[in-house]
Length: 84
Picture 1 (cartoon, rainbow, N blue to C red):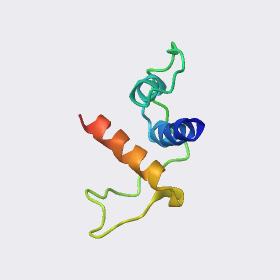
Picture 2 (cartoon, rainbow, N blue to C red; picture 1 turned 90 degrees about the horizontal axis):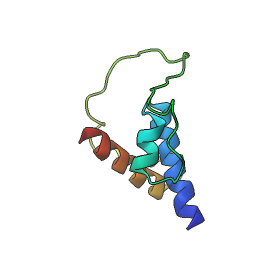
Picture 3 (tube, one colour; picture 1 turned 60 degrees about the vertical axis):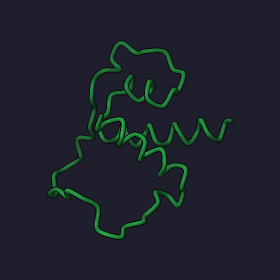
């Protein structure tokens, strides 16, 4: 159970690093944190710079973040939530 929560938390951190608000991630991944008054604000690192866009992953790409298939699955779930 703890491992599943850690996996969801890791995926939520990826989302947060991409600018998804904390409260949305907390809800989507059922993390159990209290709603934060500032949790609907998007944050991005000031070090990020645009280097262009990739509309689709390269064909046949099967990379798994950190070699962790559960994390990859959570990230796919987050992407599906964000697209809906």
